[in-house]
Every structure is written in C-alpha cells, then in structure tokens.
Length: 421
Ligand SMILES: Cc1cc2nc3c(=O)[nH]c(=O)nc-3n(C[C@H](O)[C@H](O)[C@H](O)COP(=O)(O)OP(=O)(O)OC[C@H]3O[C@@H](n4cnc5c(N)ncnc54)[C@H](O)[C@@H]3O)c2cc1C
Picture 1: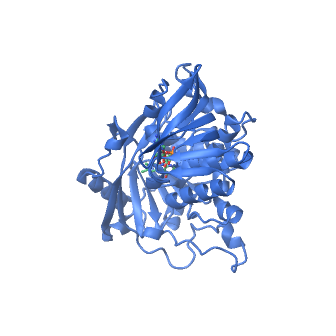
Picture 2 (picture 1 turned 135 degrees about the horizontal axis):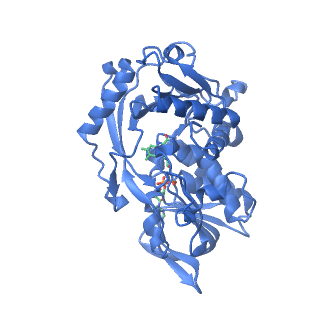
Picture 3 (picture 1 turned 135 degrees about the vertical axis):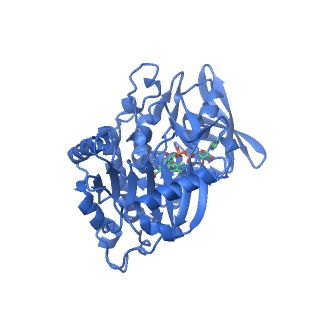
C-alpha cells in the first residue's frame, strides 16, 4: 500500500489534519491515509471537555481560537454534520490582584484580535449566573460567543468529512515500526487484525497524542513530551433556566429556516466557568445530563511513563475536592448527586504549547502533539496549518515558529502558564 501523505492517530488533530490534506490532494494521484490503532477519539479527544474559549494570554492562540470557533460554529451549515456546538458563553473569573491584572490584559488582547468579550463585575456575574457566590470585587471576562462542542461527535464529523474528500481512514490499525532508507523515513509497518502490512509514504505526520513520544523514539527522534493523568468528576446537571437565558446566544443553525435547521442542542444550565481563583473549570454536558469539573492546573496529575498503563479509577480525594470547589461557587449544585468520574491523558510540553512541524533529523516526518490539555478548541486551525506546512504552502493558520519542535534547544521557548492561561 502507498500513501502520499500518512496521518498517524485518529484523535481530533489527526482527523482535522486528514480532512484538510484531503481537501488539497487528489485521492488517486496523492492519497491521504490515516491509521488509528483503536477507534476515532480513543485517546484524549474522546474524553475532552472540548470547551471553546479565546481567553488566552498569547495573541497567537487568541487568533487561532477565534478562527477555530468560527469553523466550529459553521461546521453544521458547511458540512451538514452536527457536532453538538453550543454557544452558552465562557466566563473566566478571578480575584483582585494578579488574576484581575491577567483578566484585564487578556480582555484587551482579545479585543485587539477581534474577539467579542466583556470585562464584567460581580453584579453582572450574578445576573448571568443567578445564585453564583462571588465577592463584590471579583472580576471576570465573559465571551458570549464561546461554549463547547461534543468531542466524540466532532471526531466522527471530521472523519466523515475527510472520507467524503477522498481520504482513506482505518480504525484498528496500529503503526508499529518505521522503515528508513538512505537516512529518510520511507514506510511504516501497520498491524491490523493480527496481520502486518508495509505502507510507503512521502510525508507523514504523527498526531498520536500521549503515544507520540514513544512512536517517534522508534525513529530516533526525541522530543520533550510527557503524558500525565488528569481526573474529572461529574455531577448531575440542574435544569436550565426557563425561557431564553441571558447568557445564551443563537447558533448559526438557528439563522436558517426552521424547516432546514438541525435539531436544537439541549441547553446548558449556565455558561462554562474557568475559575482562576478557586483553581477549577466546569462545563455542562446537557446531552448526558451532567456537569464536568476539572482542575485548572497540572499539579496533582500523576506522570505516566506508559500511556497504556492508565488507571481508570478516580481518587475519592479528587472527587471530594471537585464537588467542594463547584458547590462553593455554585451552591445550586449542593442538591445534585455525583454521577461519574473519569481519568484521561494530557500530553505536556515544557511551555504548555504544542510541538508542530518537521521532526528534527527526520524532515519528511512531522509532529503535531503536546497540546497540553487545551488543544481541542484549536483543532480546525491546527488541521489547516499542518496541511499547509506539510504541502509546502504558505502557512496562514498559525505562526510555525511559535510551535517549532526545536524551540527548546534553541532556547527561544517562552515560559507558559498551564492551559496557555
Ligand atoms: C480531560 C480532558 C479535558 C480537556 N478539555 C479541553 C477543553 O475543554 N478544551 C480544549 O481545547 N482542549 C481540551 N483538552 C485537550 C484536548 O482534548 C487535546 O488537546 C486533544 O484532544 C488532543 O488530540 P490529539 O488528536 O492530539 O490526541 P489524542 O486524542 O490522544 O489522539 C491520538 C490518537 O492516536 C492514536 N494512536 C496512538 N498511537 C498510535 C499508533 N501507533 N498507530 C495508530 N494510532 C495511534 C490513539 O489511539 C489516539 O486515538 C482536554 C483533554 C482532556 C484529556
């Protein structure tokens, strides 16, 4: 089997990249092939919060989040496939002092980048989220256009889009080995249903999430990637406010004639909350009737030498911490029950920004990994930019220098806060 361009990994990044490559390449002349060792979304993507916010400290990321939000918001109208896009707004809350300074700075940068955002006070917070417990001097950034998508549906939708454009996507197909000739990677060995197959390629991209480091080490490429194990806790979601809530925005689907619009997504009970002061984030998952809570740092996340050794059991300590954080901010949750808990993987880099570009020492093999727990929202821009980069086009979707894998050796990486905050 021969591929012009090979994508390894069927998470949101590999699938978005495959869809963008397939839009640019003739399926007969230059086939795009993607291998996923399990099923689409089996890694971090399927367990993601998939929150869409542009609240970032860096203009590069703000611009990508802005463009990707537009792509997600118009996904259903452009492709006919719904991804659970919900525009419930995103609130980033902070205390006076350093957090307030960060919020003011990010709001100014977001406005300069054309993102709609309000800097709001405690009174407006209480209007948006009745019952929220905030001090009089709390401040927040409110992004009315932000929200979330459904991570599994989004992976499936990118896969369907890539296939409709002529890409070949295989699930249950694991890349186990590289073939190198005259110093250049030329093929991989793929294990599929117990059989091994050699697949040749001209260019490849490894978007294998937490498995990327080990897979590239087989090729002699060493990158500063490490996998950690975040935990999330889920409680039952209270009923959304009756009538149209002031935090809700119309989705583009709703601009269509109702006869042609896809069914409306179930409503969230409140906007997404990034609580800088209390160190957690929360977002409603209305389709599953639950609300997710996670930590806003990586400090309690255990490092995983082998990503396959993920212990699925969530500690009682974490669940108790998460419930206490949520209820302290939103006391309405005190009445609701615990419904689930989940462990997952983040793939971290030293500056919490992804590694994207040709691998040092293996220039026809690209890497797109290390999204450090905040990549889902950026996947449309990543897909477009990686396709541009791999095909030698001018890269308009992002600045390749920002994500260059060799930035640490060249000592030009910036020190980044967790989740790019
Ligand atoms: C709990 C959690 C919450 C998050 N919340 C948010 C959020 O709210 N907003 C946001 O923007 N981001 C969020 N993120 C981050 C975001 O989900 C990730 O950055 C993104 O999903 C990474 O996608 P990926 O495709 O790089 O990796 P993955 O989804 O891990 O995909 C890698 C794929 O490669 C496959 N693979 C591995 N090895 C091989 C091989 N040898 N051969 C073939 N296939 C292989 C795996 O099976 C896997 O499916 C969150 C992440 C987690 C874990």
